[in-house]
Length: 485
Image 1 (cartoon, rainbow, N blue to C red):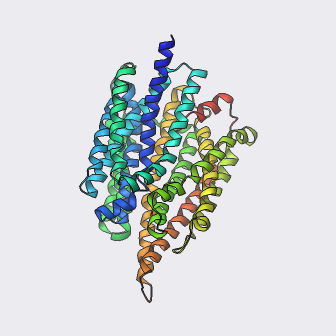
Image 2 (cartoon, one colour):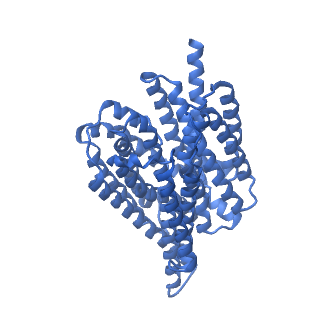
Image 3 (tube, rainbow, N blue to C red):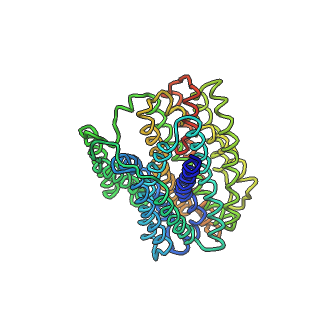
């Protein structure tokens, strides 16, 4: 019995390490962006695809990955995903061009979409419901949540002392260790379904629609919003979305059963999540570039400068459950995004000759405090009142909205930033050596203002659509143990 318990906790360590690597890879690359930009002479428009390619394929195939794990076996999907993730990371680290780097980032995202839901499913079936499972999920949540915070710090250290390529190569030995340990210790988890009807057309069509839409949004500022190419991209995206809708309606086993959207708070929470993440991802992208290319920080110093955000999130997130018990989650979801918006508004005043304590720190603190409350409240709102049979789907949808919202938001904000910077440079009466930096920072101002607008929109959606519900202790524990949402 003792040996079995010991084995169980080794399984948790393996799966948590895999999840840590997945979350880490979504943020570790941000601090390395300036170095990659110089290495491949990439524009900021192309550079954003290093982030977006990962988040889009991760979000687009996340629900498919969870469904495939149910149909074909959890361990099998986890091992396949881990192997693909390691191989993609290796080629990313050796990439001879920006185009290959972006393509393999998309492959990493697909692999992550296979690994993450399979790993969480294994955790859920390995540990008994109650204290044992709650303990396991708490460990899982702490490790997964720490991945994003560790990413910016590790990314800075690795980029400065080993080179940007090692941000990807470091995944290779970890992937090998996780693969071998999982193969030896994780028991077989065969399909529990009586069919193997995988909604591949649904997953491919929704991911293709989103990638086409994002590409159109990225290219529109340079080609024109009403140009033939832009309208073609938008038209293809709309056609694919229509195909996805009718495919889901007629599929016997759809990727996204639309019945779940009859639960009001599931729909509302996902709608709130989209602008929240659309604004948040921009912070890491634009601020990483500003801190290094404008303020002149080293990658390590840049990585440390972001650590105030996870600390503030931790302070806020630990206090929010108590507040929810007193006033409910709806008031928090109406106010917390406005705190984040205030932080973004402060960042919209960054200067070319600025400094960290005046231009960055106040905005970071407010954003972290607001986001901690948002993350907890959104998760609880999206899962309270959802049946156990649908809890995985509700969680998966919120995770998907998180990734897709980030990708779409970054595309919109980057388009605004680039076009705003271009207009500024064109209208300067007497250009000088500082003009390019002034134009760049002016573009960031517009992006931060719009990101603040996203947060205000999220608060309005919460006020109009979120339905206040009593939260039981069981709902609270279930939501708090789900890190992805």
